[in-house]
Length: 358
Image (cartoon, rainbow, N blue to C red; front, side, top):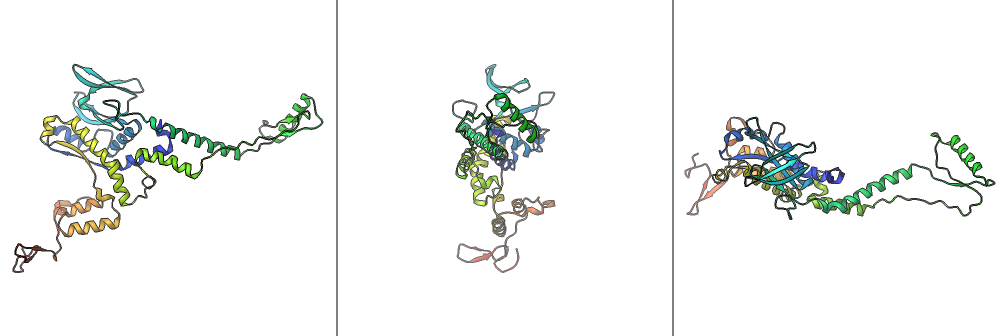
């Protein structure tokens, strides 16, 4: 499994961590009972952060993610949860496609495809499922060989290796006795790799085994392959990315996920008629939160001074809660701003032409 690789897991985790910050919202009033349950959490076992994190992880590991409904005893849908089946197939039952999936414990389930939110990556040959991650096989092999080389280098560096030719002995029994005596006297475990040769052998040479380890450039190339495949970079992995890099990461990674997730969940939860009347589910993010502190301060002051954003919207940029009793819904406008009238004159905002406060 590609998830067992340190480099791959770090890349998948970076994507999932940022995606887990998306805010899931419902628009419209259709299916109010289910909406009431899912506004708080997608199911009884997960928060939305956990839900989005696991969905993203499954999608990256398998290139196909199934988000299936959760039913109560009366077979009423009470939520949705991502599943990781061992085997999946699409079957037809009564003229309707169903998703049949089997888990590692042997349990088999099936549900109508129209009730399942299916997300895919690298979808090419199959009408429903994404391709495998076989394109990473060569890189995974290089990672495995690199790890083996490092392990062997450590082993070689912590052992002594030598050989000896013992003179004046020609009998095998004498060599064996001498070797055993040496091991017993010098090896704490009573075992050793001492080789003694009869004097009938000549030109005996030691073979030096040197473990191969990749250099920095090769290591960087391997990391680049993994990062390019998952659309991340070292700054994102190490939480060093600035506002421009994070904005690019949002455009290339988080936003495509949020769009596909929103569309798939909307189609699974609401009927076509309900969707026509504007009911949908949306996974959104305040992109201004990706700005640096200096840039946030600039945006906050400029937008607030011009009355473009209210106090609660400004507070959201800083991950602060709304003010109580609706106080944050007020807009503030700096007094020195003026409106230009059609006749070319200027009127101060919030002040009548005679100078009195409105």
